[in-house]
Image (cartoon, rainbow, N blue to C red; front, side, top):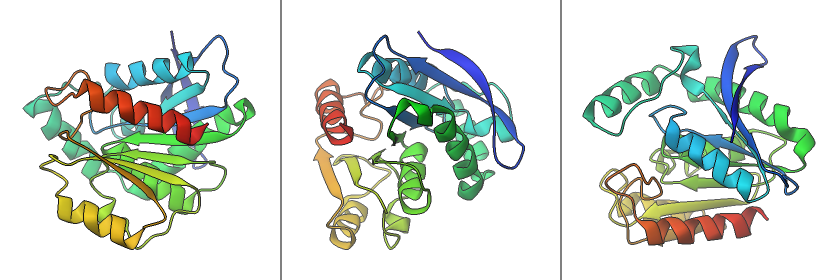
Length: 218
């Protein structure tokens, strides 16, 4: 359904992005920010899914600054390599590529950002730092607790699983106590519950979270 395109960031870096447009992409645009596994088949599927819901969805390949065509599997090797790549990219640099993706689809109407895992943290950072986005949705962003003192400048929605071993409930409680104005939902689910290619996939939680996300971004 979607296609790969090339974009150029403000600092001159050229990178790939997966973009998907539905037959009726009238609701605006969404920048999808990836997990540590790259813009793999799951992230591409998400773009296609949002396109079918009426949005123009684009996922910038944030690892392109280090390595092209990173499509990692959900296994120990994928986690190891994904973390290695992620730790080599400064979040502020990733925001530059996210901005370029937003600029590319801004003629679609209002643009929101929806991020997953590492991308969930980047979506939160985007909400705090970047202009031109309407709303932000963050799925199980492990770094959000460390950023809780930063205040989102746009309406922001957070999704967490209460059985997530990588994001303890003490972190989620700290976020909710520090940012009570930010909508936060908990699900009886593990980390990555939205991804149907993971063993932690939880269909009911994913369906409910998607419904809340779509209602939130409008």
